[in-house]
Image (cartoon, rainbow, N blue to C red; front, side, top):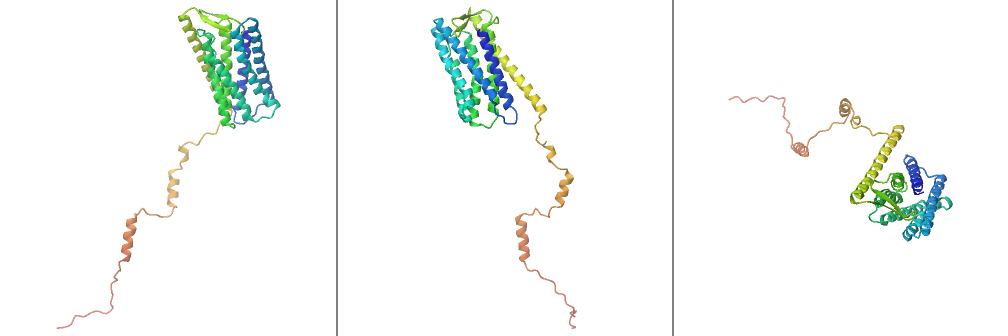
Length: 299
């Protein structure tokens, strides 16, 4: 049952993140359709229902820790449900809706950051790495409040939601299936209270290293798919490239021709002008030409 819950939650996050990245990754600005918010309401309602079932199971099992944990999860699921309901029934401004979403992501971050039921449990490593996509969603949601007309925050949040979903799938497979790390076993107290314990320190450190390796593989796969996807989009819709540097210059003949047509100018300095001015002020003596010939007197 837990594996099904993690699988459905992971697939839901992947679909929502893919829709967010596809819609806002294009050049044109698009607003989500009402169908998107309806699907988000259904998805949030699933988490509310799942938390309610886990709370009832913890109460029937006399598990105080499990009940306290679900009492923390239940309000967060309600905040996400409120975030998805507001755009459908009330005309709230977009920044106010994003503030509600940012608050929900912050609450989810604090939940997994402070959740330490068993310090020796390997599941804590999964929770620590789950903080990475949640922190990315928090950062992008806050960035959207500052730049509401930019598509980059929504695109980043879509990537964070996709990573959130793939990691939930990995957690479900690694904790509740036959793919549990060797030397470790799952101890379940109630539906929402479980821990993955190992036989000794070597098995514990090996299991934690395996979790880190799995997360790195998820990151590498996500980056590869994103690069391939946006390369395909760029090939179909090429962007105008800037003019090459060498094409900005005209031929040498054209430069010389424009230089010849320009008015004459000299490179004389100011001293040369002053020197010419001094010469102009000096009076010139013109030679006196006489038409009569002077004869020397006879002695």
